Amino acid sequence: MSKREERIGRNEALFREVNERIERVTETLQVETLTILCECGDPSCFEQIEVSLPDYERVRADPTLFLIRVGHEHSDIEDVVEEHEDYHVIRKKNASAAAQARKLDPRGG
Ligand SMILES: [Zn+2]
Image 1 (cartoon, rainbow, N blue to C red):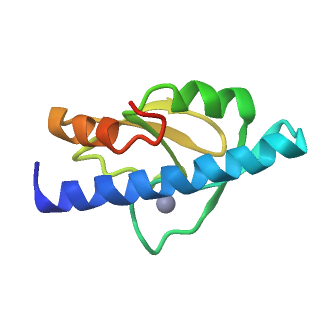
Image 2: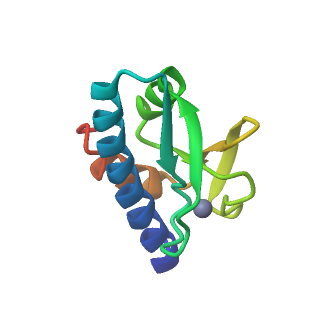
């Protein structure tokens, strides 16, 4: 895994952690749609994504998946596995990048 790939992976994991907090707050408000941050791994990207709570939970159950704005994937290191109107779901291609994503999962992988 390259330094760049590792850095992107760290940033994605950081944004995922922020989104996990947003989810917890949103759950207490009992709304069905989350407004989360793009998890593309670019530290200057603060674009927002609207995702239903069930969709967020489904994606989050797999620690190697991330939610990003359409077009924000790094196609050399990530595959787009789901296309939605407002966002795409990406999966880490590289096994060690996937392992890093699992290790940094706040849900414990
Ligand atoms: Zn982004």
